[in-house]
Image 1 (cartoon, rainbow, N blue to C red):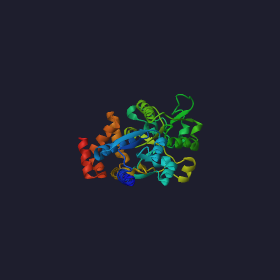
Image 2: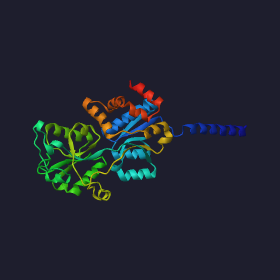
Image 3: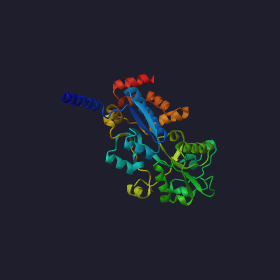
Image 4: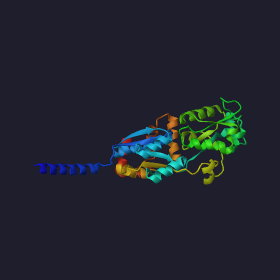
Length: 330
């Protein structure tokens, strides 16, 4: 009897092991990263709608700085990252992908630009608004050090102010390095806003008042879609110079969809969907502009965008998944 009991127990564990192997690695809730800007939130919402209504998964979003969310992706606390700006985190990205911690499954968009912007009326004026050009000879980032009086820091008389990216963003280090590379710190202060929304509010207030403003921004955003801004020139990108001083224009920056190393095994059908995910800066800005003009949440903008571009997102998934999502969007 004792031998029979042991044998039965062994069989039980074999069956249990077989059952476990069928579900090993599977997940019920897919966690996406929100690193703090609107375009990633819109793409999260598009992906979440398809994951939930098309594939039946629950989804969650984890918010944090670029560094924190990338670390979460590496560790598996985050499964999906809809906008990894690869060159903004070049060293970490290379290290993580070479280590196999996560992988890029598609390029979301690659036609983005970033750098220091001014409202175009600062250079050209705006006759319709009665604005005279405040810096008609301003062309380059290095030129900015000549104009502390135009871009005056309200808290530091005699010096100018350039808005950097928020301090938790990886790109903020690159902008800070440009202060040294171009000698901007001779006359200009490096101001880091507390958040993207704070930077936008500062820009919008200045723009609506017709006042000079200079700061870091990028496309695709609602801001660059809505306002007439000029990207200040820098020397053509040179990898060696960039790596040493950041004293060139920003490098080409593939913005990729990345997933944790275990995700293909955990949710293979969603992995395939994300491998097909592709938009553009212009398409992304459509959703962002709608969100801004109608004062709606990213999910509302995502639903609007998906109704406008059914031909695009349905090409990412199978016909039966597309039908489920279309039914949910009604």
